[in-house]
Every structure is written in structure tokens, then in C-alpha cells.
Length: 253
Image 1 (cartoon, rainbow, N blue to C red):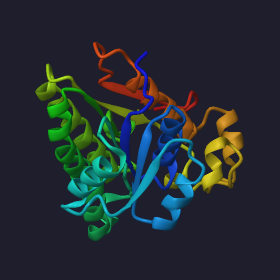
Image 2 (tube, rainbow, N blue to C red):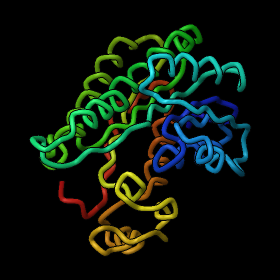
Image 3 (cartoon, one colour):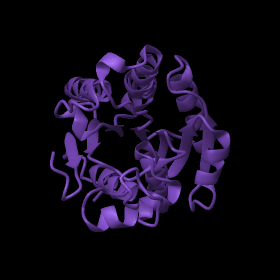
């Protein structure tokens, strides 16, 4: 296993869900973390009590200059750049014929452009160092078209195609890129509160609470995804985990 101690990682979407869980888990592995998101108060709350040095970066990943600013600030404040977790994303289910066009534009700007722009900003430093890791938060919806979320599914297919293409360009550089693709995660994206990630949380729209759904294998916790990300990052440098799909055991998909 490769040690993560002392490495530096910006994590987007770090104020909630998978991003918050990844920031916390990485910090407990000794990673200095830059928590990035749009809500300063929620970022500060997510960073409170983390054992490693941390900073917060408030901004919108959909902004053209966000990636450059985030990378520059991370290097300046935390000393280097070793890992990038491109996690920020929004969700839009429903019938495509009834979709709000502005909501569609926002989703694609965050889920696709924001992810690409962050990687573009980070690559020069990683290539110069001759090593590093880029982890993209995808979805099982990026591996198959899911009809109840066609716009979201399309955005995650784009993330998959981007990750695969860039990975082939990076062969031999020492820089790895891979995607983690969860199924249903019981966090804010699906209407569960912050405390739902550990199974103690609020009731869902179906009247089931997160603890029951976790126990029945109908959902996984954000921490489960964070542990999968740590697995990807700690493989020997000779190993690249190209795609890691992580599903609830009872999710029929």
C-alpha cells in the first residue's frame, strides 16, 4: 500500500455527502485537505476537528477560473499538490420532456465542465512532479443509461468518457486517473440529512430511514465511497484502478 501521509488534496463538493466523507477520511490518513464548495459556513463545519492541516475554498466549480484559483491556493497554502478529487455534482431526475432548461445547463456546467476544468488546472503541476492521482466521482449511471435520470446519466457518461480518454494520454507520465462510480448513496443528494451517512439519519420520501435502508442493503453510506477512494489511492504506483463501481448489495441495477 502507498502511504497517503503528508500528501495534499483539494476535494470539490466537500461541504456534504461523498466530498465531505472523502475529506474527513483523507484527513485521518494524514492528507492535508483543501475543502472546496459554494457554502463557506458548511465548509467550515465540515473542516472542524479534522486532524490534518486543512483550508477551505469557497467558489463555484462551474466558473471558468475556479480550477486555476483552487489549485494555486492549495499549493500556496498547503505546499504541494498530490491528489485531486473532482467530486462536485448536482442531481436532476425526471422526465426529459418536462426538464427545466436552466437546471439542465447548471447540471452540465457543474458535473461536466467543472470536472474537466479542475483536471485541466491541476495537470501541469502533477505532470511536472511526475506523479499524482486524479479521482473523478462518477456514478453507476455513467455505466448504463438510467431512464429516470437521463440528464444526470448523460453527464456521468461524459465523465466516464473524459476519464478514459485522459487516462490513455497520461500513460507513462506517473499520473493516474480513475473514476469511482457509486450506486445509491444515502446523503443529501438523495434527500437525506448530514447525519444520514452513518445510518442515523432522517426519513426518506418512501418513509424509510437511512438506518433501515443501510441494514437492508438498499443504500450505502458516503463513508463507504470514501473508503473505496482510499483503496484506489493506496495501490502501488504500478496499479491503476480505472473504474470502481460500488453498489448497495440490494440495488437491482
